[in-house]
Length: 497
Image (spheres, rainbow, N blue to C red):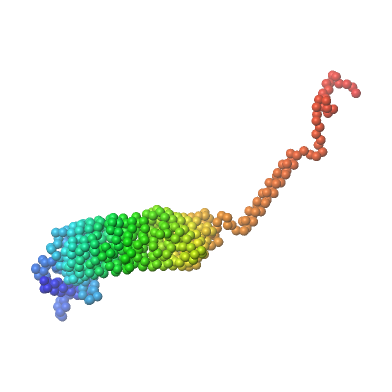
């Protein structure tokens, strides 16, 4: 076995001699390059485990595997820190099935990366290597991870098992992976995880469990994820998107820096570690963001709440207790229309508002205006992205335009005089409300009103005067016995006076 490994090591070293690690050139003086040929591997080696993935008889001359000879694409892109060649084996989409393997597969010496994704594997192949660091088994049909199946891969640092059909992760499934830093188990069917399943991965830095039905499991156990699953405090990144979680206990995660918990029906998040720096709760179906939804996270710097479908209001004190918050992202929360003036606390009354907010993303929301009370929280703001929102650029937003060193990205929708104008190009004096007009228009309106009153008064006077009788006209009653009664004189009876 040692002779086989030594022979393969010498073969791989020959790969990288010469320009680009391509065709091996003769090293002896006076040897003709045209006569140089790769040494033939012995039959016992070429038929053995070492040549199962790579065709060493034609090293690096056919990286795209055009011959369709069922060999993987083996490449030596560069040398590692130790100066030895590093072999990358790409078996992606080679239609490998379980019958391809011959017991324990001994990988070629110097292999640091092996990609077996998008094949037809239903079980985890048993591999052996003392140099492998990256292994991908993503998008196969693996249904289970047997105990100690990775025991011969002690140097493995990244393991990708995403896109399979795994339902249960056992206690010893990761046995032997003491150097593992990243494991991706997303897009499986994991509904249960045994106690201390991650206790063997002492150096685990990133754990991805997204798109698994773990809600009932965590709700049933009601225990800290760290204490139950054996996760150490070296874990810095945890991803649990779309896991049907209503709550999660991460209180013991003193080393956790980033938590991705989006698209879960979360009702509260009261048990998060205080030193958490990045939190993503995008897509959470809550209507109003209450004050007690988040605990006081004194080290939180980035809060992402994108695409929250029914979020309408950020309530009073909803973002209170986040003194280091530098970036707040609400992009795509299309129903968000109200941000309470005291969402960060009350500055004037209680001197509570204390933030370092530098980036606020309201792109694609339904925000029309922002109360001037938010000025105290926006003192350090450098970027406000409010594109796609129906901005009402009136006097209530003038304070925002007056803030120094603030770049605002957005387009006004109202009033009509400023429609489709970019917010940053509008002068402060142009932000006017209907009741707030220039003095010349106010004087003009007053003069016009006085003139109208005078004209109406004159008109009424003339009408009254026209219908009123003149003073020298006397009215007398005329009756049948009145001397002023009408007298009719007939011509034939007229008297001669």
